Length: 62
Image (cartoon, rainbow, N blue to C red; front, side, top):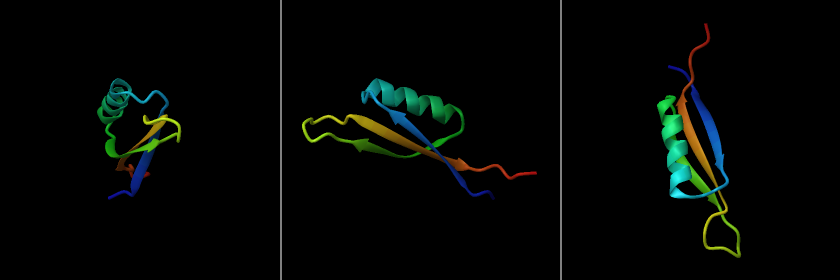
């Protein structure tokens, strides 16, 4: 059993379409969603950026 490996994707256009595209793209590559974190601006109600964190088991070397 390997240790976890992480992948962080930055989404600068925070829409359902962009988030869905990132989720579909990386899950097809074997990554599992761990969480989504949003960056907010004080002057806006919508997030200005999202960080999508994926995880998978790292492959054993050798």
